[in-house]
Image (tube, rainbow, N blue to C red; front, side, top):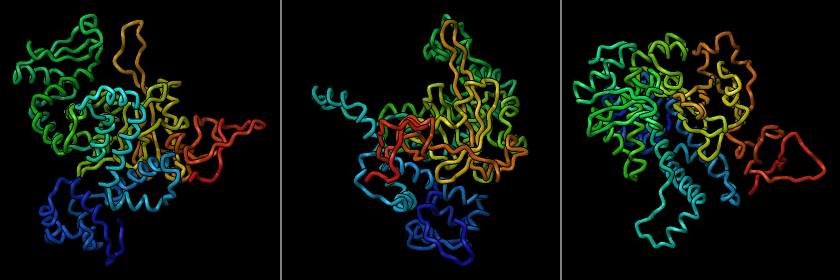
Length: 481
């Protein structure tokens, strides 16, 4: 959204998203910018231009990085549209990339609807047998429900993984507790007991069995397994307080999402309660200040706030407060089979919604080096470069002989932000060679990749019994139409 002085831009949808991300009405932002609400309305409907002066005033008044706010959603939407229209379902449609970019920029609502429709279509294909059985039973009440996990992820991304109401409530709670990170568990225990008549009990594993936390509503007891470590225990207490004290705020956020089925509604509530718990453990302003001062040293932040590596990485993706923004990180959690169980992006990294990740990304290598933090410059086929760190983490231990759960956490940002990270110290980021990766195999068109697990769905597979290539799959250079 950068513009020369005097140049006029028609960027209504972008402007509207900025206003909504700030939580302002048209009247409020008009007052802040010194223009009329009716002019704001015309700007957002693309019936009036936005001058460079208005954009600069917007940036100065609300301390915004307009480049991040203006492009992050559009880049993400474009990547998702590109993934959708690469499906063989659309192989007869020659849709130029520029038209997809125009759609992502000018019609974000349509883009979001297409994403939901394609997600429902994908789930329907996987569950055809179940749907057929429901139809055979003539169950009038049965209907298809899209993947609730993806639905909630969409809602989190729509809010840029930042919920100011919960941040404020968490900071207020910490102010009332007057507790250091080391004292937090005791302070939360007292809060539950004194304000909610809930007693916290650490229970032996043979009593809790497969459960790590359980709230006994009738006996007013919060039971936590002894397998949960110190940071996990404090987190569970904060989550319980969030459900008790922030229920109205959580419900208000959920209701803003519009009609939701019961499953995604419940999952969204739990996700927001988890968000609140992290904000209690790592209050926004102290955490943001520490992160900036420590150059985003995850291990030191974990020590200072008595939190786990994954908790800190996740919290770093939520630093989106106007006037106090952090580095726009993306986060990924995978198991050693490559299954993605968590992904968040406050930047522009194009996560795939309908597949795994690239095996060349060293987040997968952490299982071979469990005690080392790995760093890497990665480059997507379009030339966009990112800097990432990755480390394996262990979840609450499991009694013998159960397998010990292990996950890899990947945290990264665009290369232009990497100089702020302690992990990039001493690196020439401009000259650093990037590892060429793809979003995933089905969308990546890089040739001769020895790690390729399947051919790209946008190319025709070539089979030659007389030739064996480095890659298991050879394909044509021409796109399928």
